[in-house]
Length: 255
Image (tube, rainbow, N blue to C red; front, side, top):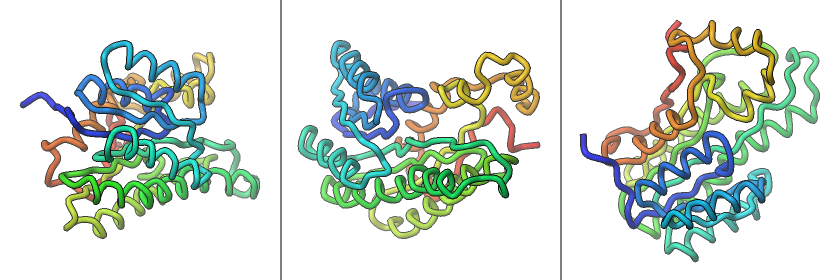
């Protein structure tokens, strides 16, 4: 297999300041891409951009709340204006929301989770696609779904609904763009060591052990393992793949 290279290509990563997003930023930079890091975490995002620049890579941090369309428009414009276009996007920003049974969940939680996890992805694609068309060449979008977008999960109805929505949105967009040299796929991470898992399980060893018992590979995944899959989906190696939701979950959904 040839080494993946993204030299002279521009990438936008939402939620790029931490967790899976930050691992993906590092991987794209290491592969030669210029990367726009879009996130609400200003300190972490600026630090990551400085780290990448100090290592000889091209990276730019842009404050971006994906629940605000003008923020998304500004981040996409930064890719175009600062780096000259946009070839790939990883729409990764998301929140887990409250953990409550469906009949006890609040209207506010439902609205917030849907607007960030689903509408935010749609807005990103809405504004990324025209810039990708103008940039030309083979382009790709990877949307971050979840194994909760492939199966049901008790206690997180809004999150699961939003991620199922991301999968459906991805497939529909892939059909819209299939003849335009823009591929659209989704990545569906399983239990990955991220700040979201830290919020869910904290330092509770039994909670973490309970998660691992559901994973056939008997371990929590690493953000770098998701990043590797994202880069492959954006590479020439996946040139005939579009409209797919790929689970990277240690076998969770194979049960």
